[in-house]
Length: 277
Ligand code: ATP
Ligand code: MG
Ligand code: MG
Image 1 (cartoon, rainbow, N blue to C red):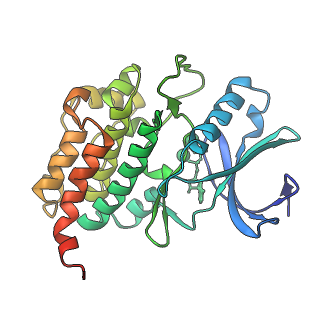
Image 2: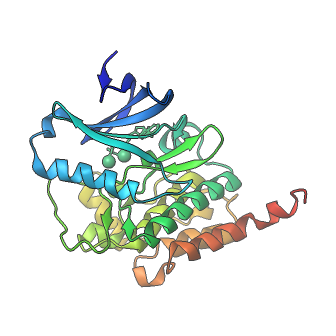
């Protein structure tokens, strides 16, 4: 098979979006599987895309957390730009939702709590993900959640907000402020997480429409169907978390991922009490 960096043997393609392709590979030096994200060929002469690709690696590499995909290496060889990362054997959350949503309340909360923990860590390191959606949440065979794709993540301190290329991120998970094009901050990530939780528990997106614009407008203006009307198995306490994270006014949302995580963990408490000491 094809080899990159004299070390990584490409095994199979496992994913990819508009900007990059993702492959499973064998690290011949350390004798383990890795995932390699490769910038698409059509962008190798585009400075802005190369910068964005590097920034993705830098954002993710500045984090070290059990719920964030680890970055191992980056490189460039014959105009091929690549990021080597931890390989997560399992499924992405979009596949799981398609397969079997609505999920059990407990499973959904456990997944949301791990995403929230990853966000808390990122936010404490001044990194905003900006593209939280089920495709970017990997679930290992052990149930461990790993957040990936910091492709449009930004350091909060970064002064430049460039808007090149097509629509960045998926509009179904955009916060109202993100949809308006104003700076998306920590609370934008919490809104997106609220949508992911809504989707896990109802099997539906709160807002959909014919075009990205119509969906964006609904995020800005429309109320969503209450989760418990779609799925009566959802406890009131969990619906409250969804609604609080999805407030249109960021000022009415959780103040931090930490605060949201506390509420999520409270919903798991009764379960924990039955665990053996
Ligand atoms: P987009 O920006 O359109 O979401 P992308 O090109 O940025 O896509 P990623 O989101 O990073 O690519 O990855 C795409 C898919 O590849 C993921 O949904 C997942 O299924 C798979 N994938 C990515 N990284 C890994 C990994 N480390 N281990 C296993 N699978 C992965
Ligand atoms: Mg992605
Ligand atoms: Mg991406």
